[in-house]
Image 1 (spheres, helix red, strand yellow):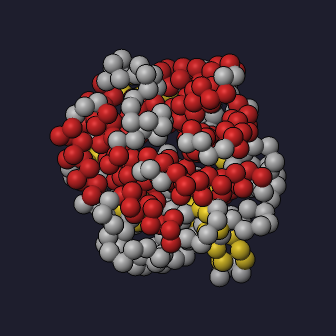
Image 2 (cartoon, helix red, strand yellow; image 1 turned 135 degrees about the horizontal axis):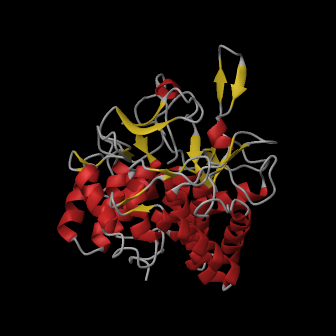
Image 3 (tube, one colour; image 1 turned 90 degrees about the horizontal axis):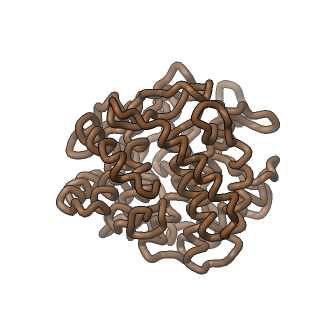
Length: 403
């Protein structure tokens, strides 16, 4: 539940593919990701999340989640050296924030080489107000995005790239540990929203975020053999299991701001990710996939959530990966074909097959406006297409479900 686009933000910003990408469509998603790294300037880089957006909050924005997913996908594609360039940007951002020095990262940064000074956030010039603006979501720190950065760094550590990557994951993990919450089913709160020095604390909890954290803390425990990481993994996993609704055969999306009351919204990632990430989750929670297949199927793939109305490329690739790892090969091939149909002409994959795909949520930055995905080339969709093609599970860093 992140990386939201508003119609106002991008209405004037859609153009043809504008980054230096291969002239013709790459032969697969791995090649596309590899080409995006090759086309960037040398050194540590953040890749743009929506390269065709030419104005507003998404112009030049590199979301942490998208870049972490791309890092893991590149490793799955056998391109660890290219993955390291993004991992090095994550480490740079940890050390060179303009304000924070406590182990947190931002939800988004400025795309491109990291430079030498404080890490830059994306922004835009507001002609009406005659001032430079930054997006409050991008300036904040969602715990789920922190977990994905941990997973990316731990994946690099596993390749033998150097102990600095595990050390970076540990620093992030210590900050996230401070978001642990005792209310209701426990687990971890959403993080922070807004700019320094006093961002708003998010008191709701997300099934998706806690799933991410359960996997990240478990892998940190395995890498470091420090027992306290295992306890944090257990806390996140316990929250996810508490969100199970046997009557629905699904996971609730999380809780309300009180940290206790379940939010019954049916979101695709909240059904799929626990089966990919949590040890032994496939059998007791198999109904989550069946529910998603029954209620969220659309256009040969899957919608983001209850509103339906279009195919969500990223989520369709997530289901493709899960069923592939479950041995349902023919279904996986059909879903990967649906994802492939959304390849942009000059590279990358569209976020959706419809102009505006509703998620069922509203924007934190503009509560009167819906959160949407658009028919735009998207780094996150490309990363998940590569993960599905390779059968590489980003939560385990292997081609397997968690043991």
